[in-house]
Length: 331
Image (cartoon, rainbow, N blue to C red; front, top):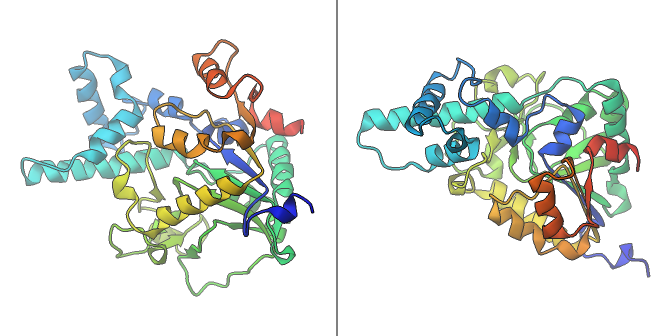
């Protein structure tokens, strides 16, 4: 009996875990955490005046030491604050929270078409990941820690891909226009986005809890896009204070499914994901499956401390220092 036939029900044989380096390799203007940190504070657009001034004051308090001004530290500080001396301070922090999330989303959102060479490599990769629902089994899953819509845009901007495949997020996320005609493609790219997506929004008027029934998909060009474009998309920011974003069924179900698929996959590959040491929960979530890791592709220079750390963590044989796009172009 083949290995494929011995798989657990609903499991995938192969999983690609995608990090920010994957997106940046195809679209250089897509920022990594390091790029976002470099924008703080003077690179923050003037449309976010409260967060920009907050960062300037914090930098002054820290005697100009920029290492205290990373986006992870800022997000944790702002999003974890729950006690305020008065109404003025509460409203001020509400504006900081709003501007922080909008700033992150605005920096990461890139829906433009890829350059022809990059689009060709990504198209070939995505075609190798297509699953056919009628076959009764699914072979390949993309498991992404990114919020961006690189994969969705690549499909939308490729006439053949758009005609042949659709994205399956692993959960049912209906379009904002519930009356819109939605074709159900037999061939799918299965994409679980563990930290949310910039084309997901809370339905108008819902509570803070992100239950599946309260979430909708809105893409540029949709009839509802003008109604939602000023709202904050659904994603878990790069902060240690994530509990408030995990209430409700959306992320709980996504992470539960991902855990099951990782447990039962035969091959796990990492593209542009560097196992950041600041996120201990993710390390534990992934490393318990290390016996099925096949390749970890990260783009770091030979003597870079992060590359050395990964080699010590996972072993020299697993790590390949390469741009994700260049790596995929050769396989």
